[in-house]
Amino acid sequence: MTVHIGAKSGEIAETVLLPGDPYRAKWAAETFLDDAVCVNEVRGMLGFTGTWKGNRVTIHGTGMGMPSLSIYVNELIQDYGAKTLIRIGSCGAMQENINVRDVIIAMATTSTTSMNDPIFRGANFAPCADWSLLKTAVAAAEKRDTPVHVGNIFSSDVFYSESPELDAQLERHNVLGVEMEAAELYTLAARHNARALAVLTVSDHLKTHEALPSDQRERSFADMVEIALEAAFN
Image 1 (cartoon, helix red, strand yellow):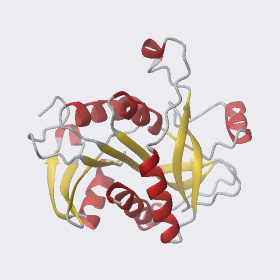
Image 2 (tube, one colour):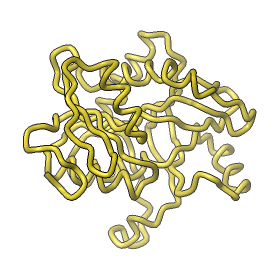
Image 3 (spheres, helix red, strand yellow):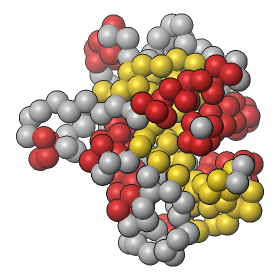
C-alpha cells in the first residue's frame, strides 16, 4: 500500500495498462479481463487486476496530465514492481492523413514540460518507446487491419492551448498527434529500466475539428486495448 494506491503487496501485476480515466479502466477490465478484481479506489482512481489469456494484467487509471501520471507510475514501478506499462488513451490528430478512430503508436514524444529540468540540467532528453513493445503493437494493429500510424507525438502540459504557432511547427515537423501523458511515462520507464508504450485512439482532429461522439468512444477504443494486450504478451 502506498500514499495513492491502496493495493496490497502482490495485487498489482507486472504488466499494467494505463488509461487516464478511472472509469475507462473499469470498462476495460470488465470487457477484456477474466476474474477482474478492484484493487484500488484511493481518491477515486480505480485499478483492477485480472487475467487476459491466462496472463495477469492490471488496468489502472492515471488521471490527466504528466504530474498525475508520474505519481501513479512511480509507485507502480518502485513499490509494486511493474515492469511493462502501456498507456491506452485518446489523442488529437495533427496530420491530414490521420482520421478519427485511427490508432497512433508513439515511437517518441515531444514536450515543453519542465518536469525533468532539475535532472537533465538543460539537456533535451528524448523519451522513446520500448522497441519490442512497439514492433509487436504495430504487428498486432496490422493483423487486425486497424489503421495505424507510428511516429512522434506531442505530450502537452495544457489541454486548452493558446499557441497556434507551436501547433503549426509541430505539424510541420510531422508530429502525429497531441495528448498529455506519454512523455513522462517514457521518461520514468527509462529511468527505472521498465518497458513502456503509448497506444492511442484518435478521438478528435485539430485541423478538421471532427470529434468522436462520446457514445462511440468505447467501441472505437476496443482496438487500442486489444493491441496493447497483444503487444504486452507476444
